[in-house]
Figure 1 (cartoon, helix red, strand yellow):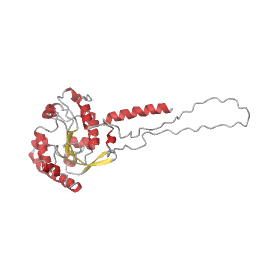
Figure 2 (figure 1 turned 45 degrees about the vertical axis):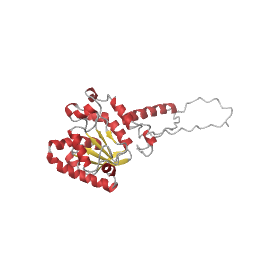
Figure 3 (figure 1 turned 135 degrees about the vertical axis):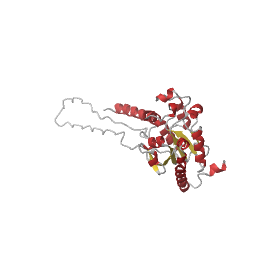
Figure 4 (figure 1 turned 30 degrees about the horizontal axis):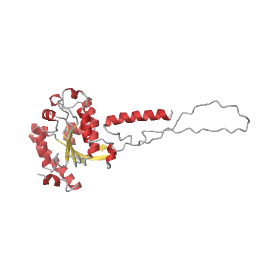
Length: 282
């Protein structure tokens, strides 16, 4: 294979991977790879003038394995985002037609919160109120979520960012289908990559199962410290009941409160002043 052929294939793979992620793919961090020819063209030699003529052996270059380096997600420098911002991701979401949910939406609901959140709260998907306003968690379940977060010193205006697995409302608020969740996965990954939250709070079964790639039920997952593998990083994650589940069954409020207290204990251990901004702005 020639160097030009290698470069063409590499660029196609890089473009495809970046499209899936919604930002510069962590699998393709190098921009200055030099490819060599593997193909040696055979040229019929001219008759040697004498038996003493020297034969020159042309070494064959080794193929370059572009997948040999493990995926890496870093993010301490702004350049790591490749110029992608939360605003540009929101703009992409607003014109997205990757799944059938785009056919029935009123507004896309990309997310809302601070630019450098200590906690990222991830739910299932927009409801009727969210679809009307373009904002996440603003209906009755959202009002309860705000109270739940405030009880442990968290808020979308001070130290949190709130998003969903899918960015468009499923009809009749049904659970998102796997293909719909997959269609939005790149946007959510991009948001996590840019925001770099220290912790993730997954609200409900759909959020937890999609983030952790598991079929385990919420009753088993909730209240335990788990990890979201993200590139080379592991983000601590806890799942609890979705606020809408608490509105349907008040018996779930007590265990949900136990989960939140456990979540707060971890936050305090890692960053004792995490809630200072929240309390000073109340």
